[in-house]
Image 1 (cartoon, rainbow, N blue to C red):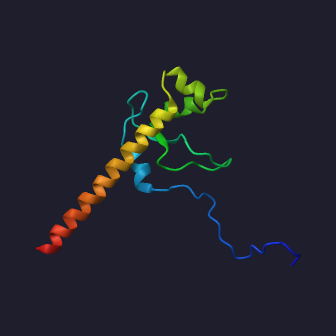
Image 2 (cartoon, rainbow, N blue to C red; image 1 turned 90 degrees about the vertical axis):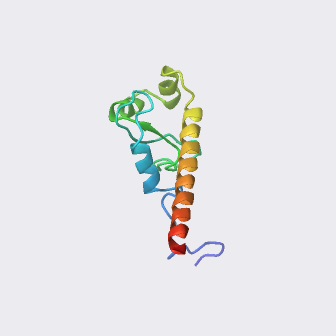
Image 3 (cartoon, one colour; image 1 turned 180 degrees about the vertical axis):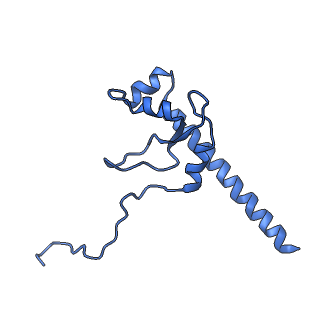
Length: 122
């Protein structure tokens, strides 16, 4: 091998190192659409920088119904334009849902652990 060249053979690098959670995506799908209140799906709206063609972290998202989700990705509809149309700052919206997810998921884990310990003591 040439001098100063790294041999990456056998090195496994995840395609996307961001936070992934099926429970998080399900939590978003259980919420109503942020804009119209219809049944939602999980829409990534990433705060952190990411590479092209990579989905952002699952906890940086907004629940949007299929129709609103399609509008968000309409040709010529950038992120800023879309959210300004609805009078919202997308960073605040994403931040609020991220905060809610972590608060609720942490509370659920603590409650589950507590109930598990209580059952063990019987």
